[in-house]
Length: 409
Image (cartoon, rainbow, N blue to C red; front, side, top):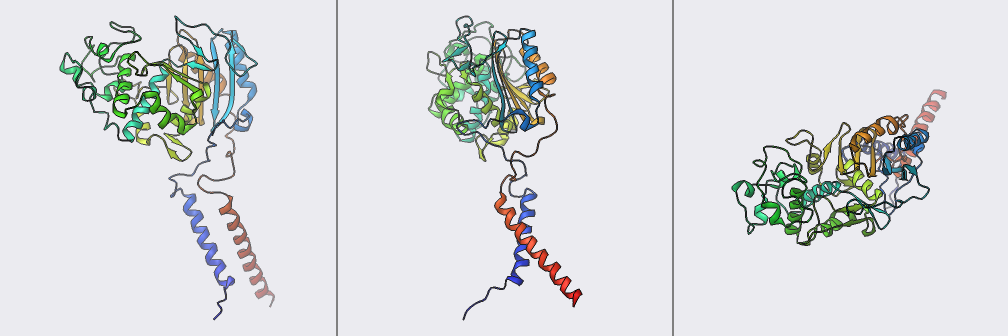
């Protein structure tokens, strides 16, 4: 027996079903929310003119007139908006370079500022990367939680007081461990773990805030111990490679024990810095992959104890930022879906200078909110809309035609 498909009866049902699916998706039930799809960079960034993302190029370039007039020793500026790299310039001697690369720069007391021509020292921005890696290590089950003590990973070391045995991962992440501050008594660029633990604590862990690069190095030692990998290798596998940071985009120094420095020692290209910023701006998500859990990213950006410091990030009036000595910064500006990256050799109050530049040149360059970067709604494409449109028009046309024939007859 041959079955005949009744399109006349079926079309309204199909149309209603597709409209229901459309409403289901539009309300964000599937994805949690509907938003413009981020144009995630793969090997290369999606480079757009600022104007395509609602920014005035002239206003941005007025920033460089200010930089030159005020002899502000910035080395590079990169701006990412709506997932697009809309601006990247390099500066040497306070003037824009024609080449998209760093010019010759002297070292700083024996520390190279730039290596291999493209990698810029990060100084304490390294700490933020450590924070992200601790989160990944917890996500992957290498570490249980932030309440675990350092001594539980290294029980054979010497702890002169019970307070030292009580130092937790959380204390180290929030600069509340009590370990001596940068350039304080006992500070040295290359120390063993035991040497870091030897000096008297400044205070009982968890009771005060004292910035300490040495304490952050202990977190790198925990990553090394808990994962069985160097911190740099763990970073490459679980953080850098998933977001497109290649081996040519970074270099990470290590101490005499073979442990990557936790408080400094990382070198990045500006575009690698921007990738880290884009990951943080999107709460640990990269191209629909949750590289770092949202819960961890929420903790990273929450002030702890001090009120102005999260998990190895500094709070700002915009959100939070990774910040390194002499002006190495990844600044998140969620209100404008934007990241601003600076490299520099600024000896005093770099963040104040950056906030002035952002407030007076970069944010003012933003005009009206731009249209979505592409016509697709995040989660589905025109392949859904076109059948809906065709079926809808056909169905409505038939209804109108039938009503017209009834009236006519």
